[in-house]
Image 1 (spheres, rainbow, N blue to C red):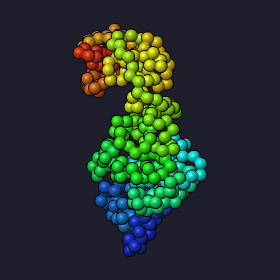
Image 2: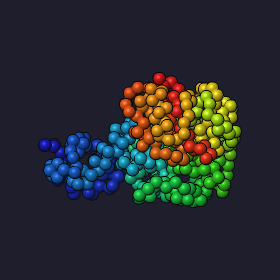
Image 3: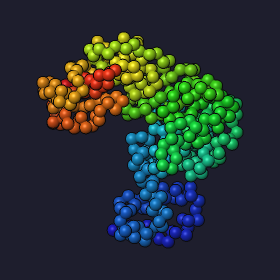
Image 4: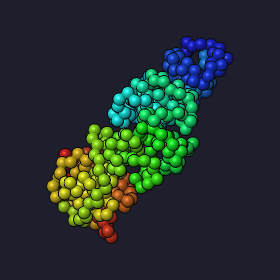
Length: 397
């Protein structure tokens, strides 16, 4: 394989700053195309690439290519980004960034603190300035958003009283994702000075954060949980002037394009299986609003903290996926298999709560074909009983 590229670029490239190295690699079409076509684990391929480019250039190009591929479906203009894989992984998706940006209105000063590669910065109003302690991240954010960035420690940033802030603290160590407010960098206590000195804003946190974790939060707030593609992917603490629903919780579904706000309201309980099982949207359940919305439609919960509700009729609520109950059996696989044969069912999906069973194992054992009518089995523990509820998802033939 022959590549047309620059020879003897090693001394010049290494004289560039780290940021300029990434910018240079990102505009080197011949380098990117050659690396894209090559197996970087192959010694011969690497030797061929090294005839034209340094190891540093090849390494950066490889990272750029993988990052752009990873961004497809998550970030707008993915193939034109300046980013690495970690930056893309940590970045807010375009649709969530645009959802959050709707609260940042007007011409007031706005700062995007810990701006990363600029996915939120790109969606925020034009006057927004990004701030990050990492100079390469600032370069990436400016490139991707077309906006100004400042390289400094966000805890040292001078913030005027009328300023709105978007804060995305790091929630990763070198080996794992971190979920607590104390593990963020900067952590919530360190951010309290910013929270109390600006007009308002939001802090991106782990969706594992609970309202009770914010008892010592400085000022009024609203906690929002955001679902995307069936998973709760972000928690947002809105505070100050941007907390439009003070002391309440908001569930937002990007899948539905809807939000609901309220306070915790426990549902009534009824362990009788009849009519329909209602599975709440993940954001609704994470916000603990499934009982609040469930009470509005006359639904009851099958057991305390189970999360699944039940109604006599299909309420047609967008916040719940309804499953029509066909039969119930003791939670023994031979009993379930017998009932499925009677229903003429050859493939199933299995759902459970509290790890009552291994759903994958049961699904494999109970599905004899990949065609035919599909039924859904809920394997549940209701009090001391273990029950299999055989259902048909609404709209499933």
